[in-house]
Image (tube, rainbow, N blue to C red):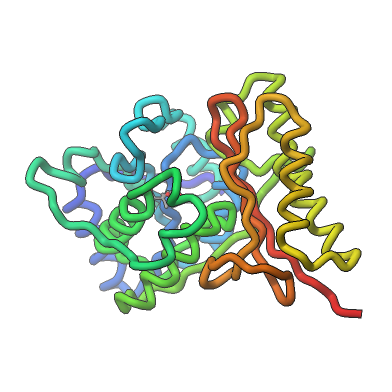
Length: 288
Ligand code: PAF
């Protein structure tokens, strides 16, 4: 239902508005995003709608989660389109702050987790999860939600946010939403916009590798190195691909496992041309 949507850019205005909502007994559901919305975001927004009287999304391309050689400047942005999409999904408020207000020139406070950020994406993106945990903490303090929604596509991010919320006693319920895929299986991502037609074909290798691992596990393969090897071979058979990692790990601690003896996360990061893509699923071995 398209309704009146409010766009707030000033941090103190957002805080004031959140306080007012809480004083009148409203619950707040929150979906943090970096904008350039696609069906994946809309899935988060629809889930958010179910969990609060007022639905707030943030649109903020957070500079502290990008490394110096990463795509912060190039990251796709289209606020007008995002506003239209959000309005058509019944979002009540968009919080879209300026980077200078979120991080002033004397800024110096960061939220860092000890262990979870060391695995998977951290090898290639040092400091990324420090930036994510920091901005999510700041957004929580500004928007004051009861519930916050995150996508399972960024699985490591979701595990980190859940741990941070527990560790810092945020009184916020975190909800994870399954990956939304294109009809051919490619996980939705704002970065898919970077892919050429040929690269788009090769990008399918991520989902195919995940599916192949699922099939292998269903057929009784339990050895992690065999599963990783076969997934990697499949990805390498496509042009333009360069594997950053294919990992099998514990879905909570993210530590690598040698065998699939219970629910196990398969997570992958693959460069397709100049675009870095990720995908994952939980492998569920069924014992006969
Ligand atoms: O998942 C994202 O889009 C971002 O990492 C988030 C959670 C909005 C923080 O900037």
